Image 1 (cartoon, one colour):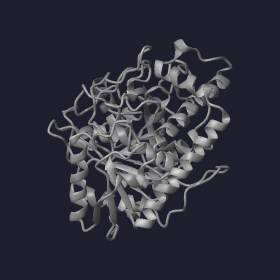
Image 2 (cartoon, helix red, strand yellow):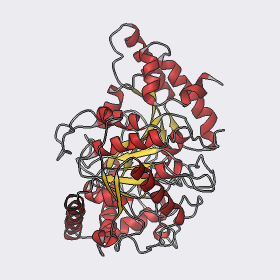
Image 3 (cartoon, helix red, strand yellow):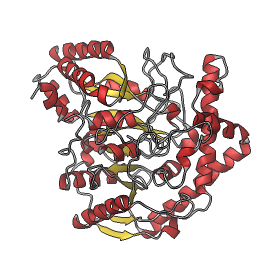
Image 4 (tube, helix red, strand yellow):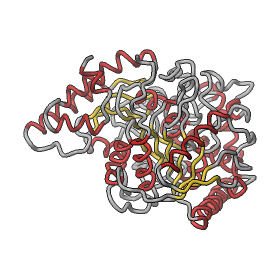
Amino acid sequence: MSISDELSKMDAIAQADLVRSRQVRAIELVEAAIERIEHRNPRLNAVIFNMYDQARKAAATWDAAINSGKQGGQIFCGVPFLLKDLFAEYNGAPLNEGSRAVKGYVSKVDSEIVRRHKAGGLIVTGKTNTCEFGLLPFTEPVLSGATLNPWNPGLTTGGSSGGSAAAVSAGIVPMAHGNDAGGSIRIPASCCGVFGLKPTRGRNPLGPLFGESAGGLVQEHALTRSVRDSAALLDVTSGPDIGDPYSAPPRDRPYLEEVGRDPGQLKIGFLTGVPDGWHEETTLHHDCKSAVQHAAVLCEGLGHIVEEANPEQFSDANIGKVYGRVFNAFTAHVFAYWEREFGREITEDQVEPLTWASYKRGLKLTAGNYLQSVEDMHRFARKIAHWYHEGGYDLLLTPTMRIPPVAIGSFQPTNEEPMRWLDPTNSFVVFTRVQNMTGQPAMSVPLFWNAENIPIGVQFAGRFGGEDTLFRLAAQLEKTCPWSERRPPIPA
Protein backbone atom coordinates (compact mmCIF):
# COMPACT_ATOMS: atom_id res chain seq x y z
CA MET A 1 0.00 0.00 0.00
CA SER A 2 1.35 3.43 -0.97
CA ILE A 3 1.92 6.28 1.46
CA SER A 4 -0.88 8.13 -0.32
CA ASP A 5 -3.31 5.33 0.50
CA GLU A 6 -2.14 5.25 4.11
CA LEU A 7 -2.58 9.01 4.45
CA SER A 8 -6.05 8.84 2.92
CA LYS A 9 -7.20 6.82 5.94
CA MET A 10 -6.11 9.53 8.38
CA ASP A 11 -8.17 12.50 9.41
CA ALA A 12 -6.83 16.04 9.13
CA ILE A 13 -5.62 16.30 12.72
CA ALA A 14 -3.64 13.07 12.39
CA GLN A 15 -2.04 14.27 9.16
CA ALA A 16 -1.08 17.59 10.74
CA ASP A 17 0.47 15.75 13.69
CA LEU A 18 2.81 14.01 11.25
CA VAL A 19 3.89 17.36 9.83
CA ARG A 20 4.44 18.95 13.23
CA SER A 21 6.52 15.98 14.40
CA ARG A 22 8.49 16.15 11.12
CA GLN A 23 7.64 12.56 10.21
CA VAL A 24 6.12 13.88 6.99
CA ARG A 25 6.58 17.21 5.23
CA ALA A 26 3.67 19.35 4.13
CA ILE A 27 4.78 18.98 0.52
CA GLU A 28 4.46 15.20 0.88
CA LEU A 29 0.86 15.57 2.09
CA VAL A 30 0.10 17.85 -0.84
CA GLU A 31 1.75 15.58 -3.41
CA ALA A 32 -0.15 12.59 -2.00
CA ALA A 33 -3.43 14.51 -2.27
CA ILE A 34 -2.58 15.52 -5.84
CA GLU A 35 -1.90 11.86 -6.64
CA ARG A 36 -5.31 10.90 -5.26
CA ILE A 37 -7.02 13.66 -7.23
CA GLU A 38 -5.34 12.47 -10.42
CA HIS A 39 -6.18 8.80 -9.81
CA ARG A 40 -9.60 8.96 -8.15
CA ASN A 41 -11.24 12.11 -9.38
CA PRO A 42 -11.66 11.02 -13.04
CA ARG A 43 -14.16 8.44 -11.79
CA LEU A 44 -16.04 10.97 -9.66
CA ASN A 45 -15.78 14.48 -11.15
CA ALA A 46 -15.64 15.93 -7.65
CA VAL A 47 -12.69 18.30 -8.16
CA ILE A 48 -13.21 20.73 -11.06
CA PHE A 49 -10.24 23.12 -10.63
CA ASN A 50 -6.72 22.06 -9.73
CA MET A 51 -4.71 24.52 -7.64
CA TYR A 52 -1.50 22.51 -7.56
CA ASP A 53 0.92 25.39 -8.09
CA GLN A 54 -0.55 27.44 -5.24
CA ALA A 55 -0.66 24.35 -3.01
CA ARG A 56 2.97 23.41 -3.65
CA LYS A 57 4.10 26.96 -2.97
CA ALA A 58 2.10 27.08 0.29
CA ALA A 59 3.48 23.68 1.36
CA ALA A 60 7.04 24.84 0.77
CA THR A 61 6.37 27.90 2.91
CA TRP A 62 4.98 25.79 5.74
CA ASP A 63 7.89 23.34 5.60
CA ALA A 64 10.41 26.16 5.73
CA ALA A 65 8.63 27.75 8.67
CA ILE A 66 8.47 24.47 10.58
CA ASN A 67 12.13 23.69 9.93
CA SER A 68 13.09 27.13 11.24
CA GLY A 69 10.92 26.67 14.31
CA LYS A 70 8.81 29.74 13.48
CA GLN A 71 5.55 27.88 12.76
CA GLY A 72 3.90 24.54 13.37
CA GLY A 73 1.41 25.12 16.15
CA GLN A 74 -1.57 25.41 13.80
CA ILE A 75 -4.05 22.57 14.27
CA PHE A 76 -4.15 21.74 10.53
CA CYS A 77 -0.56 22.60 9.68
CA GLY A 78 0.16 21.48 6.10
CA VAL A 79 -3.09 19.57 5.50
CA PRO A 80 -4.53 19.55 1.93
CA PHE A 81 -8.04 20.98 1.70
CA LEU A 82 -10.60 21.49 -1.04
CA LEU A 83 -12.74 24.59 -1.46
CA LYS A 84 -16.26 24.40 -2.82
CA ASP A 85 -16.63 26.62 -5.89
CA LEU A 86 -19.37 28.75 -4.33
CA PHE A 87 -19.36 31.88 -2.14
CA ALA A 88 -15.97 31.34 -0.53
CA GLU A 89 -13.41 33.11 -2.70
CA TYR A 90 -9.68 32.46 -3.08
CA ASN A 91 -7.83 35.47 -4.46
CA GLY A 92 -6.54 34.75 -7.95
CA ALA A 93 -8.46 31.49 -8.42
CA PRO A 94 -11.39 30.88 -10.78
CA LEU A 95 -14.90 31.19 -9.34
CA ASN A 96 -17.69 29.85 -11.55
CA GLU A 97 -20.40 28.93 -8.98
CA GLY A 98 -21.51 26.16 -11.34
CA SER A 99 -22.78 28.64 -13.91
CA ARG A 100 -21.95 29.42 -17.53
CA ALA A 101 -22.97 32.99 -16.72
CA VAL A 102 -20.00 33.38 -14.36
CA LYS A 103 -17.45 31.18 -16.18
CA GLY A 104 -14.10 32.90 -16.48
CA TYR A 105 -14.41 35.05 -13.35
CA VAL A 106 -11.30 35.24 -11.17
CA SER A 107 -11.64 36.11 -7.49
CA LYS A 108 -10.18 39.43 -6.41
CA VAL A 109 -10.10 38.77 -2.68
CA ASP A 110 -9.88 36.01 -0.10
CA SER A 111 -13.15 35.51 1.75
CA GLU A 112 -12.65 35.84 5.49
CA ILE A 113 -13.31 32.15 6.02
CA VAL A 114 -10.65 31.26 3.43
CA ARG A 115 -8.20 33.58 5.15
CA ARG A 116 -8.92 31.68 8.38
CA HIS A 117 -8.52 28.32 6.60
CA LYS A 118 -5.05 29.39 5.50
CA ALA A 119 -4.14 30.77 8.93
CA GLY A 120 -5.13 27.44 10.47
CA GLY A 121 -2.60 25.66 8.31
CA LEU A 122 -4.85 24.31 5.56
CA ILE A 123 -3.53 24.20 2.00
CA VAL A 124 -6.18 24.62 -0.67
CA THR A 125 -5.33 22.09 -3.39
CA GLY A 126 -8.39 22.45 -5.62
CA LYS A 127 -12.03 23.46 -5.90
CA THR A 128 -15.03 21.15 -5.88
CA ASN A 129 -18.08 20.84 -8.07
CA THR A 130 -21.42 22.44 -7.21
CA CYS A 131 -24.76 22.96 -8.88
CA GLU A 132 -25.55 26.34 -10.44
CA PHE A 133 -25.43 29.01 -7.71
CA GLY A 134 -26.05 26.28 -5.12
CA LEU A 135 -29.76 26.28 -5.89
CA LEU A 136 -30.34 22.51 -6.14
CA PRO A 137 -29.99 19.52 -3.78
CA PHE A 138 -27.91 17.57 -6.32
CA THR A 139 -24.64 18.26 -8.15
CA GLU A 140 -25.19 17.97 -11.89
CA PRO A 141 -24.38 21.38 -13.40
CA VAL A 142 -24.46 21.80 -17.16
CA LEU A 143 -21.15 23.66 -16.92
CA SER A 144 -18.99 20.91 -15.42
CA GLY A 145 -21.15 17.78 -15.42
CA ALA A 146 -22.41 15.48 -12.68
CA THR A 147 -20.40 14.39 -9.66
CA LEU A 148 -20.76 10.64 -9.07
CA ASN A 149 -21.44 9.00 -5.73
CA PRO A 150 -18.49 6.87 -4.52
CA TRP A 151 -20.94 4.30 -3.08
CA ASN A 152 -22.73 3.88 -6.40
CA PRO A 153 -21.75 5.95 -9.44
CA GLY A 154 -25.31 5.83 -10.73
CA LEU A 155 -26.64 7.75 -7.73
CA THR A 156 -26.64 11.42 -6.76
CA THR A 157 -24.13 12.83 -4.30
CA GLY A 158 -26.75 15.32 -3.17
CA GLY A 159 -25.99 19.02 -3.29
CA SER A 160 -25.04 21.61 -3.45
CA SER A 161 -21.77 20.51 -1.76
CA GLY A 162 -21.76 17.22 -3.65
CA GLY A 163 -18.23 17.63 -5.00
CA SER A 164 -16.83 18.15 -1.51
CA ALA A 165 -18.79 15.23 -0.05
CA ALA A 166 -17.65 12.84 -2.79
CA ALA A 167 -14.00 13.90 -2.39
CA VAL A 168 -14.06 13.31 1.36
CA SER A 169 -15.94 10.02 1.03
CA ALA A 170 -13.43 8.76 -1.56
CA GLY A 171 -10.47 9.68 0.66
CA ILE A 172 -9.08 12.35 -1.64
CA VAL A 173 -8.86 14.75 1.31
CA PRO A 174 -9.87 14.31 4.96
CA MET A 175 -12.23 17.28 4.84
CA ALA A 176 -13.54 19.84 2.37
CA HIS A 177 -15.36 23.14 2.50
CA GLY A 178 -19.12 23.36 2.08
CA ASN A 179 -21.95 25.82 2.62
CA ASP A 180 -25.61 25.28 3.39
CA ALA A 181 -28.80 27.26 2.65
CA GLY A 182 -31.29 24.40 2.87
CA GLY A 183 -29.25 21.27 3.49
CA SER A 184 -26.32 21.71 1.11
CA ILE A 185 -23.82 20.33 3.64
CA ARG A 186 -26.08 17.79 5.33
CA ILE A 187 -27.75 16.26 2.24
CA PRO A 188 -24.48 15.36 0.49
CA ALA A 189 -23.06 14.16 3.81
CA SER A 190 -26.00 11.75 4.00
CA CYS A 191 -25.66 10.61 0.38
CA CYS A 192 -21.90 10.02 0.65
CA GLY A 193 -21.63 8.62 4.19
CA VAL A 194 -19.61 11.40 5.82
CA PHE A 195 -20.14 13.82 8.72
CA GLY A 196 -21.64 17.21 7.91
CA LEU A 197 -22.48 20.01 10.34
CA LYS A 198 -24.27 23.28 9.59
CA PRO A 199 -23.35 25.75 12.33
CA THR A 200 -25.58 28.24 14.10
CA ARG A 201 -26.49 31.31 12.05
CA GLY A 202 -23.68 33.84 12.38
CA ARG A 203 -21.14 31.35 13.74
CA ASN A 204 -18.87 31.61 10.69
CA PRO A 205 -18.26 34.87 8.80
CA LEU A 206 -19.43 35.57 5.25
CA GLY A 207 -17.33 38.70 4.77
CA PRO A 208 -15.92 40.75 3.34
CA LEU A 209 -18.41 40.51 0.48
CA PHE A 210 -21.53 39.53 2.44
CA GLY A 211 -23.00 40.32 5.83
CA GLU A 212 -25.65 37.67 5.55
CA SER A 213 -26.98 35.76 2.57
CA ALA A 214 -30.56 34.80 1.64
CA GLY A 215 -32.07 36.33 4.75
CA GLY A 216 -29.66 34.41 6.98
CA LEU A 217 -30.23 30.99 5.36
CA VAL A 218 -26.61 30.48 4.23
CA GLN A 219 -23.96 29.17 6.60
CA GLU A 220 -20.37 28.09 5.92
CA HIS A 221 -18.51 25.05 7.23
CA ALA A 222 -17.31 21.67 5.91
CA LEU A 223 -17.75 17.97 5.32
CA THR A 224 -15.41 15.68 7.27
CA ARG A 225 -14.78 12.03 8.02
CA SER A 226 -14.17 12.57 11.74
CA VAL A 227 -16.10 14.55 14.32
CA ARG A 228 -12.95 16.04 15.81
CA ASP A 229 -11.92 17.53 12.46
CA SER A 230 -15.26 19.30 12.18
CA ALA A 231 -14.97 20.63 15.73
CA ALA A 232 -11.38 21.78 15.31
CA LEU A 233 -12.16 23.47 12.00
CA LEU A 234 -15.02 25.38 13.60
CA ASP A 235 -12.57 26.55 16.26
CA VAL A 236 -10.36 27.89 13.45
CA THR A 237 -13.07 29.64 11.46
CA SER A 238 -15.77 30.75 13.91
CA GLY A 239 -16.19 34.13 15.51
CA PRO A 240 -17.39 37.50 14.25
CA ASP A 241 -15.53 39.42 11.61
CA ILE A 242 -15.18 43.20 11.83
CA GLY A 243 -18.44 44.75 10.63
CA ASP A 244 -20.57 41.60 10.76
CA PRO A 245 -24.28 42.46 11.22
CA TYR A 246 -24.63 39.85 13.98
CA SER A 247 -22.88 36.79 15.39
CA ALA A 248 -23.79 33.56 17.18
CA PRO A 249 -23.62 33.27 20.99
CA PRO A 250 -20.04 32.76 22.19
CA ARG A 251 -18.87 29.22 22.88
CA ASP A 252 -18.02 28.08 26.42
CA ARG A 253 -14.74 26.44 25.40
CA PRO A 254 -13.00 25.28 22.21
CA TYR A 255 -15.22 22.88 20.28
CA LEU A 256 -12.40 20.35 20.05
CA GLU A 257 -12.61 20.05 23.84
CA GLU A 258 -16.28 19.03 23.50
CA VAL A 259 -15.27 15.93 21.54
CA GLY A 260 -15.10 13.16 24.12
CA ARG A 261 -16.68 15.31 26.83
CA ASP A 262 -19.57 13.65 28.69
CA PRO A 263 -22.81 15.07 27.24
CA GLY A 264 -24.79 13.98 30.28
CA GLN A 265 -28.25 12.55 29.80
CA LEU A 266 -29.81 14.31 26.82
CA LYS A 267 -33.49 14.51 26.04
CA ILE A 268 -34.00 13.77 22.35
CA GLY A 269 -37.26 13.96 20.45
CA PHE A 270 -37.48 12.19 17.10
CA LEU A 271 -39.71 12.39 14.05
CA THR A 272 -40.75 9.49 11.82
CA GLY A 273 -43.25 11.57 9.88
CA VAL A 274 -43.26 14.87 8.03
CA PRO A 275 -45.08 17.65 9.91
CA ASP A 276 -47.84 19.47 8.05
CA GLY A 277 -46.61 22.33 5.91
CA TRP A 278 -43.02 21.12 5.66
CA HIS A 279 -43.72 19.32 2.40
CA GLU A 280 -46.63 18.36 0.17
CA GLU A 281 -45.78 14.67 0.32
CA THR A 282 -45.98 13.27 3.86
CA THR A 283 -44.66 9.75 3.34
CA LEU A 284 -41.20 8.77 4.52
CA HIS A 285 -39.18 6.05 2.78
CA HIS A 286 -38.78 2.98 4.97
CA ASP A 287 -34.95 3.19 4.78
CA CYS A 288 -35.00 6.73 6.16
CA LYS A 289 -37.47 5.77 8.86
CA SER A 290 -35.30 2.76 9.76
CA ALA A 291 -32.25 5.02 9.99
CA VAL A 292 -34.01 7.26 12.52
CA GLN A 293 -35.22 4.29 14.55
CA HIS A 294 -31.71 2.82 14.53
CA ALA A 295 -30.25 6.13 15.76
CA ALA A 296 -32.93 6.41 18.45
CA VAL A 297 -32.02 2.96 19.77
CA LEU A 298 -28.31 3.85 19.74
CA CYS A 299 -28.99 7.03 21.71
CA GLU A 300 -31.19 5.22 24.19
CA GLY A 301 -28.43 2.65 24.66
CA LEU A 302 -26.06 5.49 25.52
CA GLY A 303 -28.39 6.49 28.37
CA HIS A 304 -30.27 9.35 26.75
CA ILE A 305 -34.00 9.96 27.04
CA VAL A 306 -35.47 9.35 23.59
CA GLU A 307 -39.13 9.81 22.71
CA GLU A 308 -41.15 10.31 19.57
CA ALA A 309 -42.21 13.90 19.01
CA ASN A 310 -45.65 14.93 17.86
CA PRO A 311 -45.49 16.31 14.30
CA GLU A 312 -48.45 18.59 15.08
CA GLN A 313 -46.17 20.55 17.40
CA PHE A 314 -44.05 21.49 14.39
CA SER A 315 -46.80 22.00 11.85
CA ASP A 316 -47.00 25.23 9.93
CA ALA A 317 -49.20 25.17 6.85
CA ASN A 318 -47.33 28.04 5.22
CA ILE A 319 -43.67 27.41 5.99
CA GLY A 320 -42.77 25.58 2.77
CA LYS A 321 -44.09 28.47 0.69
CA VAL A 322 -42.26 30.96 2.91
CA TYR A 323 -38.96 29.21 2.27
CA GLY A 324 -39.68 29.15 -1.45
CA ARG A 325 -40.30 32.89 -1.58
CA VAL A 326 -37.06 33.69 0.24
CA PHE A 327 -35.15 31.31 -2.00
CA ASN A 328 -36.58 32.87 -5.17
CA ALA A 329 -35.67 36.31 -3.83
CA PHE A 330 -32.16 34.99 -3.23
CA THR A 331 -31.91 33.88 -6.88
CA ALA A 332 -32.95 37.35 -8.03
CA HIS A 333 -30.26 38.79 -5.78
CA VAL A 334 -27.64 36.43 -7.28
CA PHE A 335 -28.47 37.79 -10.73
CA ALA A 336 -28.30 41.39 -9.49
CA TYR A 337 -24.97 40.73 -7.77
CA TRP A 338 -23.27 39.28 -10.83
CA GLU A 339 -24.85 41.75 -13.24
CA ARG A 340 -23.38 44.57 -11.20
CA GLU A 341 -20.02 42.82 -11.07
CA PHE A 342 -19.91 42.22 -14.84
CA GLY A 343 -21.73 45.37 -15.93
CA ARG A 344 -24.07 43.37 -18.17
CA GLU A 345 -27.32 41.43 -17.98
CA ILE A 346 -27.44 37.67 -17.50
CA THR A 347 -29.60 36.14 -20.21
CA GLU A 348 -31.77 33.03 -20.26
CA ASP A 349 -29.40 31.11 -22.53
CA GLN A 350 -26.56 31.51 -19.98
CA VAL A 351 -28.30 29.69 -17.13
CA GLU A 352 -30.17 26.47 -16.48
CA PRO A 353 -33.99 26.25 -16.68
CA LEU A 354 -34.50 26.02 -12.90
CA THR A 355 -32.27 29.04 -12.30
CA TRP A 356 -34.14 31.15 -14.82
CA ALA A 357 -37.56 30.09 -13.50
CA SER A 358 -36.55 30.87 -9.91
CA TYR A 359 -35.13 34.24 -11.01
CA LYS A 360 -38.37 35.18 -12.78
CA ARG A 361 -40.38 34.22 -9.71
CA GLY A 362 -38.06 36.30 -7.57
CA LEU A 363 -38.63 39.35 -9.75
CA LYS A 364 -42.37 39.13 -9.11
CA LEU A 365 -41.90 39.45 -5.36
CA THR A 366 -42.22 42.88 -3.80
CA ALA A 367 -40.01 44.21 -1.03
CA GLY A 368 -42.99 43.75 1.26
CA ASN A 369 -43.37 40.10 0.21
CA TYR A 370 -39.73 39.42 1.03
CA LEU A 371 -39.72 41.15 4.42
CA GLN A 372 -42.97 39.46 5.41
CA SER A 373 -41.45 36.08 4.52
CA VAL A 374 -38.39 36.81 6.64
CA GLU A 375 -40.69 37.72 9.54
CA ASP A 376 -42.66 34.49 8.98
CA MET A 377 -39.39 32.56 9.28
CA HIS A 378 -38.61 34.34 12.54
CA ARG A 379 -42.02 33.45 13.95
CA PHE A 380 -41.52 29.83 12.92
CA ALA A 381 -38.11 29.86 14.62
CA ARG A 382 -39.71 31.04 17.87
CA LYS A 383 -42.26 28.24 17.65
CA ILE A 384 -39.51 25.64 17.27
CA ALA A 385 -37.47 27.21 20.08
CA HIS A 386 -40.45 26.99 22.43
CA TRP A 387 -40.71 23.25 21.72
CA TYR A 388 -37.12 22.77 22.88
CA HIS A 389 -37.38 24.91 25.98
CA GLU A 390 -40.88 24.06 27.17
CA GLY A 391 -40.37 20.34 26.64
CA GLY A 392 -36.85 20.31 28.01
CA TYR A 393 -35.49 18.89 24.76
CA ASP A 394 -31.82 19.15 23.88
CA LEU A 395 -32.04 17.74 20.36
CA LEU A 396 -34.44 16.84 17.59
CA LEU A 397 -33.65 13.70 15.59
CA THR A 398 -35.00 13.40 12.03
CA PRO A 399 -34.02 11.78 8.76
CA THR A 400 -31.58 13.95 6.84
CA MET A 401 -33.46 13.12 3.62
CA ARG A 402 -37.03 11.93 3.03
CA ILE A 403 -35.87 9.31 0.51
CA PRO A 404 -32.52 7.58 -0.24
CA PRO A 405 -30.19 8.96 -2.92
CA VAL A 406 -31.87 8.87 -6.32
CA ALA A 407 -30.43 8.12 -9.74
CA ILE A 408 -28.39 10.84 -11.41
CA GLY A 409 -30.62 12.78 -13.78
CA SER A 410 -33.81 12.13 -11.81
CA PHE A 411 -34.32 15.81 -11.07
CA GLN A 412 -32.54 17.45 -13.98
CA PRO A 413 -34.67 20.50 -14.88
CA THR A 414 -35.95 20.98 -18.42
CA ASN A 415 -37.45 23.97 -20.17
CA GLU A 416 -40.83 22.22 -19.98
CA GLU A 417 -40.39 21.25 -16.30
CA PRO A 418 -37.95 23.74 -14.74
CA MET A 419 -39.14 22.92 -11.21
CA ARG A 420 -38.99 19.16 -11.70
CA TRP A 421 -36.95 18.65 -8.53
CA LEU A 422 -39.90 19.93 -6.49
CA ASP A 423 -42.07 16.95 -7.54
CA PRO A 424 -43.45 15.93 -4.13
CA THR A 425 -43.08 12.21 -4.85
CA ASN A 426 -39.31 12.55 -5.34
CA SER A 427 -38.13 15.65 -3.52
CA PHE A 428 -35.97 15.02 -0.47
CA VAL A 429 -35.37 18.56 0.88
CA VAL A 430 -37.82 18.42 3.75
CA PHE A 431 -36.11 18.26 7.12
CA THR A 432 -32.84 20.12 6.52
CA ARG A 433 -34.19 23.48 5.38
CA VAL A 434 -35.95 23.99 8.73
CA GLN A 435 -32.69 24.72 10.55
CA ASN A 436 -31.67 27.24 7.89
CA MET A 437 -34.89 29.11 8.63
CA THR A 438 -34.50 28.88 12.41
CA GLY A 439 -30.72 29.41 12.46
CA GLN A 440 -30.15 26.32 14.62
CA PRO A 441 -27.07 24.13 14.28
CA ALA A 442 -27.69 20.68 12.82
CA MET A 443 -25.57 17.72 11.75
CA SER A 444 -26.00 14.73 9.47
CA VAL A 445 -24.41 11.64 10.99
CA PRO A 446 -23.65 8.47 8.95
CA LEU A 447 -24.97 5.72 11.21
CA PHE A 448 -27.00 3.57 8.80
CA TRP A 449 -26.50 1.82 5.45
CA ASN A 450 -29.43 0.22 3.64
CA ALA A 451 -29.63 -3.24 2.04
CA GLU A 452 -27.96 -1.87 -1.12
CA ASN A 453 -25.00 -0.61 0.98
CA ILE A 454 -25.97 3.03 0.43
CA PRO A 455 -25.49 5.43 3.36
CA ILE A 456 -28.63 6.95 4.89
CA GLY A 457 -27.79 9.80 7.24
CA VAL A 458 -29.79 11.04 10.19
CA GLN A 459 -30.00 14.62 11.34
CA PHE A 460 -29.67 15.93 14.88
CA ALA A 461 -30.68 19.57 15.37
CA GLY A 462 -29.62 21.40 18.50
CA ARG A 463 -30.72 24.53 20.26
CA PHE A 464 -29.59 27.87 18.85
CA GLY A 465 -25.89 28.18 19.69
CA GLY A 466 -25.74 24.53 20.75
CA GLU A 467 -22.89 23.10 18.66
CA ASP A 468 -21.25 21.92 21.88
CA THR A 469 -24.06 19.44 22.54
CA LEU A 470 -23.97 18.22 18.95
CA PHE A 471 -20.22 17.56 19.06
CA ARG A 472 -20.46 15.70 22.37
CA LEU A 473 -23.20 13.40 21.10
CA ALA A 474 -21.55 12.96 17.69
CA ALA A 475 -18.33 11.83 19.36
CA GLN A 476 -20.29 9.31 21.45
CA LEU A 477 -21.97 7.94 18.36
CA GLU A 478 -18.70 7.85 16.42
CA LYS A 479 -17.09 5.78 19.16
CA THR A 480 -20.11 3.45 19.42
CA CYS A 481 -20.68 3.06 15.68
CA PRO A 482 -17.45 4.12 13.91
CA TRP A 483 -18.26 5.04 10.32
CA SER A 484 -14.73 5.88 9.18
CA GLU A 485 -13.99 2.17 8.88
CA ARG A 486 -16.57 1.90 6.10
CA ARG A 487 -15.10 2.71 2.70
CA PRO A 488 -16.98 3.12 -0.57
CA PRO A 489 -16.25 0.78 -3.50
CA ILE A 490 -14.99 3.76 -5.53
CA PRO A 491 -12.08 3.89 -5.22
CA ALA A 492 -11.50 0.28 -4.24
